[in-house]
Length: 216
Ligand code: GRF
Image (cartoon, rainbow, N blue to C red):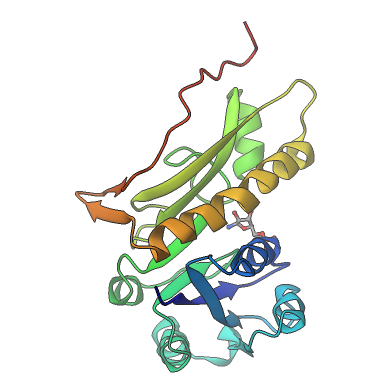
């Protein structure tokens, strides 16, 4: 089966991008990254993409008078790359409803919490303040409302005694690097179906072991 062509949008260091690049090196991975686009020239992930031989592009949002003008150029760049799917990987611009609708069920995001808990910024600080026993990440199809949309994959990690934001963030980030390549593989291989705001996954297996924290 032909590999699905994917554009990845970034704003920063690009560690999730790197996880996708690494996964896509496997010959049987169902997606290939054909373009990486940053909205700021200093995004560290641009170098990661260039090192991997992937075409990169910077579309600096500050050079546009408004969001629709920026998104028109972004949309054209994605389409010019031939991408069929778009992955947001630490892309720090809100996208308008019309952009999101144009890419409905082909636009994927990763968020560092177990949505619908803790949308928005400062997820780890808020998780610690709330005293939750599990944190994690969510890969989801994007809808117009920020950090919402049908959930493809979640990965949970325990919150441990003595955690501060940095320690928790590092544990969640390691989970992100496994969850995102899995989610993209499920979508790219056609195993996901969206209906009624949820995603079903063909032929998936689910861990049935009880997670309990603190351990009984
Ligand atoms: C990740 O925590 C991701 O969940 C969030 O932004 C961060 C990006 O990190 N949306 P990186 O640029 O992929 O390292």
